[in-house]
Image 1 (tube, rainbow, N blue to C red):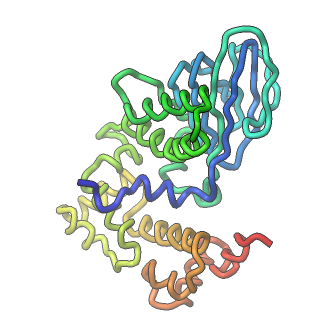
Image 2 (cartoon, rainbow, N blue to C red; image 1 turned 90 degrees about the vertical axis):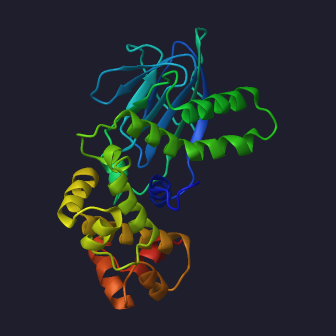
Image 3 (cartoon, rainbow, N blue to C red; image 1 turned 45 degrees about the horizontal axis):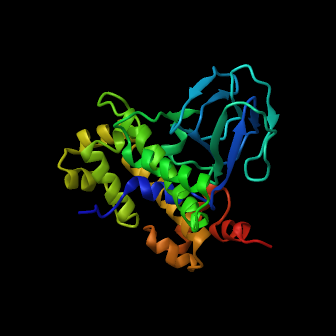
Length: 303
């Protein structure tokens, strides 16, 4: 039975501000690609062969077939066939790199367009470089998606133009889920714990499912079977902020998504996220975003 609310899927949907851009990159050594800082989250898949990731100011990281990399803050970096290889500037969605005569590597490189001014803690609390290695027996869904993607890109079978973008879209959730699973420790603080602690997860599901409800800490604690103090402590340790602070954050995130993706009247948006008046909602939104909701919506509308 599927759960009524999937918090991770909901967060990712709220963070996305547009479709991903990506490109298939077929390389033969020697090669070196330099990626400029991105205002989205950059990702790379090694579909065939090997590569090295050189983060700005960091040590080179070896990558093999099936490995996935996510740079949540779009950090400047390079991909190379050898740690000492020189690099050239590269945009995977518009360019093909210089070709050598050496060993082949097939990569999928791209960027997710995500909300950067007010990133959700799922994104903001990740490290600058997230690597999910292709460990046998781990993260079968992610490994299967990468395998299918590699086959579709390499063979160019009919329908690949529909299959690949759908897999790329799902890839962000698969990478995040795999990383959280690998970093789940009961004594750690962070979203790896938040998504695996039953009480915290259940409370997040309640908030996400009904952001407009008049939640109190006592209400949430009672619904998950904890005392008020124990619940508040566990939630704050896992999520990184108190329950009602997160509730306000999610209400504003939901409001921004509704303003961005729908043409509902401001009074309707206000009611959906728990405000009894449009004025109160507009005041809270402006305090958080710096502009009134009507102005925010106009700024997102193409001229």
